[in-house]
Length: 335
Image 1: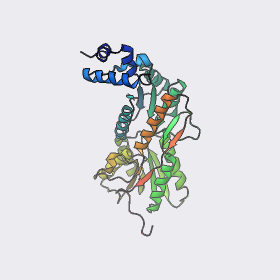
Image 2: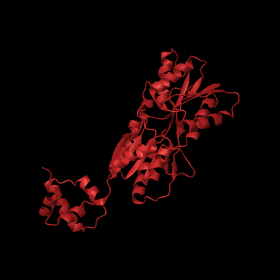
Image 3: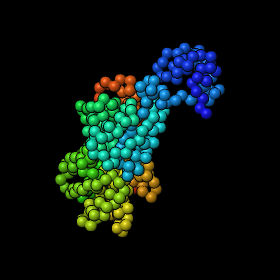
Image 4: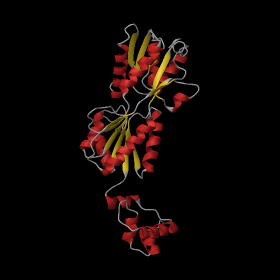
């Protein structure tokens, strides 16, 4: 049977309220008392009851971690970092899949049923209205991988997707491609829109380079493969910015199955630098998104908001960089 608080109090020779205070964050208890209680707890194998503690403090330490694109393997890396990071801070992640959810208010009601202390929206494809709905409901919220804004309504941590689009365009031009393409994810996603805008803005400075564009219906391997198979039937570009590594890997599969080779026939550059992109059989040239720093910063903001729910919203944007591997032709001689 589980050891009770009463048994710890009797072993330590203190009151039950003293034991309760010892295991309550922020409660007043002397160092001598804490040592006696912790010694008794170790001897008896006592662990505080998290549910009982939440009833006492009004804090569950539950953090809703919500996303919607579970087809993309990058989120295995993201969730691993988030869950370990939150647990290291004494918080408990509650993972919620909003893949089929379209109403922000439904997600707010769902998370409120679990009395979460805060919410991290970990998605670049959920509309900004989801994060705002939590803010309007008085729930501390951070939007990770969200859209950059100079006047954010909620805390946003991520990258400048438009600049990533410009980086990809410059890379393709520098490598001498005369027909380039943008193959984005879902057209309605803000990340896709910004990457497309940045790409096309940079290409407008190079009128001698032909530009085409298309969109996959998901950030997924199958969607990238389908879209590339379609493109290869209709005068394909010499190289594509796929806007996401998993789309690029799907496109790479389509190129191979079509009897073509990469980068000799079709070049590819992705975005994220996910673990799979480094595999020898993929070897994807891509844009590195500093995922670990984004996750760490998001957790820092969440912890700060739990202490100060009225903290003014801020945007934290991290720089990206090109990672050269094997899916683009070499730079032109002399560059």
